[in-house]
Length: 208
Image (cartoon, rainbow, N blue to C red; front, side, top):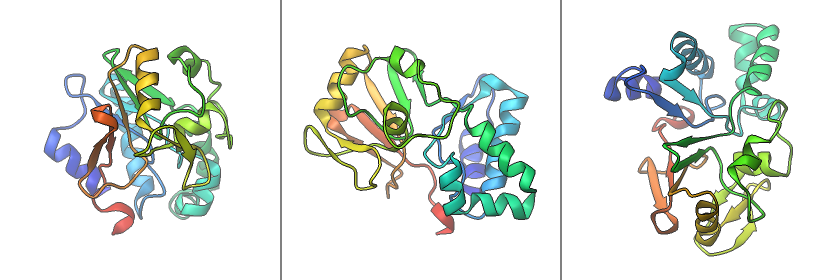
């Protein structure tokens, strides 16, 4: 929560002139998940075009049960809110495109080539994330240094190389993939010949 406040202090509060896109995993990341998500939702209600929120792999019932958000909601609010959060998380978009050139997604790319933005738009996202398929891969996949595809170290999604990134960008007339999903000591990392950037904006991750 204090990292979030620090971002606003450094860069200004969200507004139509100063919009933000937050890229998933708003909860399960420390002691103040309720405060983080309610602050983000409050800004969204106050000025919808000031803030955009993408779904991460932690915006799901199964992860919230294991990693603490469900218990935090019960202790600070009530059982009713556990269900309300689960419902509203299903409304969060799975990806964004900025200026028709930058693809922003929480996790990464796909186990098959040829996926178009229209395929992503066609996903029925109003559900709990499945354990395979496009929705799962958007939320869970990670880049790898070697070309091609490999198994994920997480056991869900996959690892994908620079060639996969390049083909996806070419197929969709895009220039760059921006994603999150992995802790980076410097706060970000540029990979895949400059075509993929991981952004990780929580220096006090999980209260550490």
